Length: 483
Image (cartoon, rainbow, N blue to C red; front, side):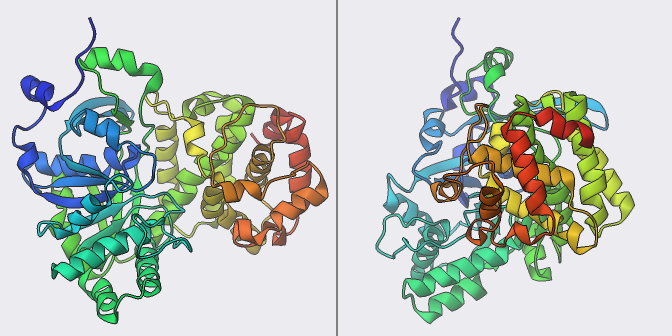
């Protein structure tokens, strides 16, 4: 018999959601409807609502022309978060229907509905996750565009409407994985407001009447379990085309002034539920630990393991060579150049390996490889530089990951590998060949990397050798000596 689809009527009949869920006021506007925000921020909001600690819903804004708003509306904005993983070595599995999405808005379909969000006096928080490249201005932005292209420009228009309404400022919480994301977003907003010719009083209101915090978010979210969907639907008793799988581990570090920390804890009292929401003066130590010991190995394995025909993090960890390769990268190339206590690094690295080895989550390498150039710049290039600047040799495993990126983006491999990145980035790899001159040309491209990796002594020679070997399909021969 065909499964019933998860809708509000069905969920109410089955007792899966609160009958009063849609009566909660909208308190959060969330830019982004992807798997991560729905399985992390919206999941936390749900826990707070379930405990009567928030009493508010989320308005999800689809910031790009293509997204999930239509699919979410087809299920009355309901979806299931499935947590599966290991906690202290023991298996843990839960599922919960999220009923805290009160509204969705596609800015490309209804710009006016988006602007109307600003008129809500109950609104308290702006949350975003628009990828590492999202917090940036665009030359194409204009105050007449409906919508403008960039996320900062969209948010400026929303804030200008709220300012004109005479309403209070907001707590602005970016979750994009860049350093000092709160300050970066504020700077982009002010730059855009000046470009649009808005009055100085509005710029002052942005800066002084809103609370900007910097954050670090940490939860592995494989997303929709496509290969397992029918089995899970049978277990749940309904069909959910928007369900999201995630690991039980969740960490949200929020940094700012003492007043900002107080406001975060007041509006989002997640600590009282045992959720690891940390408020601090400085996110940097937490960010370095996570970006360099979790995200950096993720990027390495996505670049190299796909050339070996592997498709998921689980397959990487089940392959003795690749698991050893990744563990050695962490212990020999990354941990020695981090400034945290060794005991803390050891503990976190051990937890990361357990999370990578989660037998329940099928975390696709193709998903991790999205926008690989930006991720390599943020996650691995700093480690390359630190090693060399501290008098250490060029880290071979990270150098091999860079070569794998060049081979993949330059189409120098016969392997069928998905590439998803900005067209302008992909253009920088056009006419790529496995030759020294070509490799060095790409590595010297400061527009691509922000700085030239060829300035790292010895990297050009290694890049040429590794690109040649990988382009001839000798992935095993490159990986084995480093495993």
